[in-house]
Structure formats: C-alpha cells, structure tokens
Amino acid sequence: MSGLGERFQGAAYAAGWGLVRALPESLARTAFRAGADLSFRRDGPGIRQLRRNYARVVPQAGQQELDELVRAGVRSYSRFWMETFRLSGMDHDAIYRHVHERFIGQSLVEAGLDRGKGLILVLPHTGNFDVSGIWLVGYQGRFTTVNERLKPESVYQRFVAYRESLGFEILPTGGGAYRTLLERLRDNKIVCLLADRDLSRRGVPVNFFGEQTRMPEGPARLAAATGARILVVENTFTEDGWGLRMHSPILVSGRDEVASATQRIADGFAADIAANPADWHMMQKLWLADLPADRRAALRGEPEEAREEAPESR
Image (cartoon, rainbow, N blue to C red):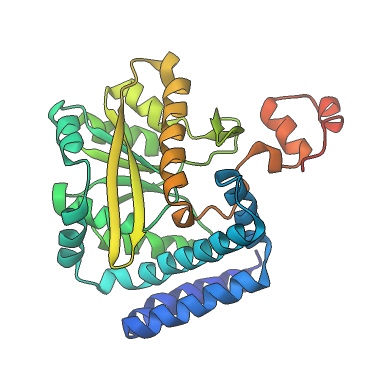
C-alpha cells in the first residue's frame, strides 16, 4: 500500500471511531446494514470468497439459501464493525451483565483455573469477540491476547489503544509474544487466541468441513508446555445482544499431541460454525484447495520443479 493509501486508511479508521461512536445507535445500525446490503449486491472478491467458504459449511444449500446466508453473513460482519467503533463508549458493566446472564461454561472456566496452570481460550472469527473480552475482564480481570501487526502503523496503534481501553493486554505477533504468553499461563492467567487460520508452513494440517486447511499450532504448543487447559469459545450475535459459550476442554500432554489437539479445536469450531454460520466472518481464502497451485506446493515443501506441475486450484 502506498503512503497516500495508508494515510487514507488511517484517516478512515479515525473517522470511524469518532463519527460512528457519536451517532445515535439506531442511525448507526441502519447505516451499517445499508452498507452491508450494498456490499452484498456489489459482490466483490471478499463477498465471493465468503460464499465459497459458506458453501463448505452448508453444502446442501441451494443458490437462494446460499444467497440469503451470504447476505446475513455480511450484515453480521458489518454489525461487528459498527460495534467495534462504538464499544469503547458503551456501558461495559451493562454488557458484562447481559453476557453473564446468558454465558454457558462457567464451571469449565473455574475448573481450568483451579488447576493453577492458566487457561487458553481459542476462538474463530465469529460474532464479536471484543464483547466476550469485556465479559472476561468483568468476570476474571485482565487477560492477554495477540494482535496482528496491521499496516499502516497508525491503524495498528489504534486497535491496540482500543482493545487496551477495554481492559485487554495486547501483544504484537512475533518477537517475544510466545514467551510472554508462557509467563502469563505459568502465573495462572488467561490467554485468548484467534485460531481458525494459519496458511503458513507452521500451520498444523487439519480436516475442516471435509477439506484440508491449516490452523495455528500456538494454542496446543502453549498447552503442552504449561499444562494449561484449552477451551473452545463460541461467540454469537443475538437479536438483543450477544451469546457466549465455552466448551470442549482439551489437555495436551506433550508435543506429540499438538496435531491431534489442533484437530480437536478445528472440530469444535466446525460444530459451532455449522450451528450459526452467518456469524462466521471468514472473507479470506481458508481451504488449501482455494490457494494457487504454487502456494499449495510451497506449503508442502515441494521443490520449484514440482510446483510447476501441481494441479490448478479450483
């Protein structure tokens, strides 16, 4: 992205956090829903990829049903952004109470922390995980998570400041993040990690809705190193707010169990996404079959000559 483009993007996010926060809620909801419907009609690359992703989740859906799901998914994603721009000015105590009344899995959280080895919460890109973070801060106190190093730097810093204002400890990806996460778990703290996509050589191969992809090894590696229990997190939107459920406790006894534990995480994600597909906001390529042939070959570690003969992706 050019310097001018980065400055424009930074200004757009700044306007979002300023203007959208100042709007009456009803007007903000109407505007963001209209924007979502316009994006759906324009059918850009992200919308088309969302459609391909949803087709794996609901393979039995006909064209009309898939169209309706994609429209609902774009509206859900738009709602996430509307709330992102408004959350820092909302009543966090009221949000905590609302979520806590509906929260499922409190005994699992308590049991995990009673072990004294920390707790790892893993979640896909569903619902509004920042709202769930507000609940967690209200329930247990400050927790630690990792934020991708976005560009431009001004946008990254705004996201850091925003999430820190909600009470989260934010670590940038790379550097000493892994070491810090280990320290937090050894102090019996909670670590939250987005964990439904890692299309790199470090990603762990998993079967997801019947096809191959890769997911981060970090959660299972941390669990193997510390003895911390993993819980799968389901974030959903409801008509009047948000839903939150934690389930599927996973223990990882050693590095040789990292792959199987990551598959169990993927299975937990799949069950939750299948139940509420519109709240899964995955507008990027996720499955290996959607990647260019050379990138798939690179993930397999094939030499250049082998990559040239790889079959084309669909």
